[in-house]
Amino acid sequence: MAGIDHAPPPFFKRGPAPLALLTFYIAISLALFIVDLRFRSLNLLRQSIALLVDPVQRVAQTPGSLVDYAAEYLQGMRALQQENRELKHAQLNTAPNLQRQVQLEAENARLRKLLAVKEREKANGQVAQILYTARDPFSRKVIVDKGQQSGIVAGQPAIDEAGVVGQVTRVFPFSAEITLITDKDQAVPVQIVRSGQRSVVFGLGNGQLELRYMPANADVEVGDILVTSGLDGVYLPGFPVAKVINIERDSAYSFARIFCVPVAGVENFGEIMVLDPRQPLPPAPPESGSRDGGAATDKALLRQKKRATKGN
Amino acid sequence: MQPTFSSSRILLPVRPWFIFFSLIAAVLLNFLPTAHWPGMPDWVALVLCFWSVREFRRVGMGWAFMLGLLMDVADGAVLGQHCFAYVLLAYVSATLSRRLLWFPLLQQALQIMPLLLAAQLVQALMRLAVGADFPGLGYFIGPIIATLLWIPATFILLLPQYRPVEQDPDRPI
View (cartoon, rainbow over the protein chains, first blue to last red):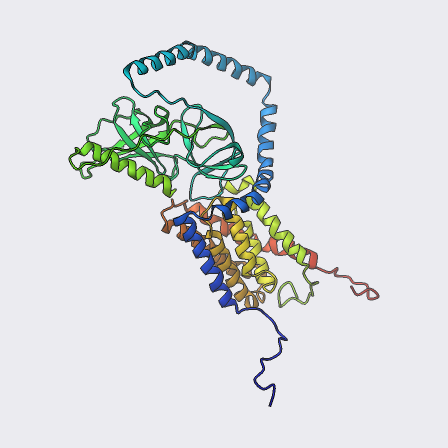
């Protein structure tokens, strides 16, 4: 009885059962999700797909930029002349400080040499154009037109004419993704200009920032300017980051809730400057148990910042 | 095949290149800067859902997965987020397809709404579970607009398959 144990001929070939396929694809999706989030080892896959998608995305963004261009073109001579006059005025206002800056920097370098203090790092960088905002509604990121080809690496800070905008988080061959400082839990180590106090400012995700871990009686006032402290080895010290707009002091909590708005035009479109990566900081001294609390908190903050930078 | 199973109108068979073309067009629509406007639908989810209902033999979870990967990279989202939602969407729409096509268009749209909402909700839950920021309830307006677009989408996407109403008996095709 040959043939009785044969499988039926494949008349209705339909591939694997839908439920099996579903399980298969969902397993792959979840694996991708976890690997991308936890181990960040899928950069090659992402970069190769981005290479394909990026030109198309740029072309798709052109209608918007064409409208912008037309609006700018039709703005007229009068408005331009007005702007030109204002800019000249502003330039004249800053001229006294700027003209002496070269001399001041030279003097500063000389004095630092005299005092045997390490010289200030110079801020160099390259100008990049913001192409579009990333479509992901869960985070705040923008895409700029410089990438691996221009030598951009992940971690470089980005500033505009007013202050810090964000940090490069992903690099593609011809573009790079910048996470804005207002992204949730994006952290920047800062210093309050008025009091010199150090802390870390975190993005809230709604366009504001929060200065966390400041005691309820901390010396912070509305209107205080926060600048980068440079303790993280990522941002150079002294760039304006945010301005305090609201302080909630509640004695029920040990920390004050301090809300700030970014100084830079974080949500604007235009040109930004991607600063070169900093020279590596000197190695940290070995930890000793007898240090006081202040240094310990600083270190904890720094560690948290590092984790946040790595995690986002 | 008919526009709906209760219709007496017979459609021409679908052309595979048209399916491909419509999916690519949906991806392009998603790339437009209008994507940031509140209540913009996810065009890829809509078109994918449509073809999974009409032609589940041709457009299935494989397509959903690839499109999801594309959208993940284009969005700057976590890889696998759109893949998961789209694969789920394609599977459920294919399962519902035999039942769905008996209904008139408006009722079809009503049954599609929970699917599109679920696809969006799954993505939100995945991201919230790993500590992202809640994007606001405006995020869920998109699927509702997409539901309203189900009726025009059906007309547009079936357009190449309609035959002229008055046919020449000498030339049946």
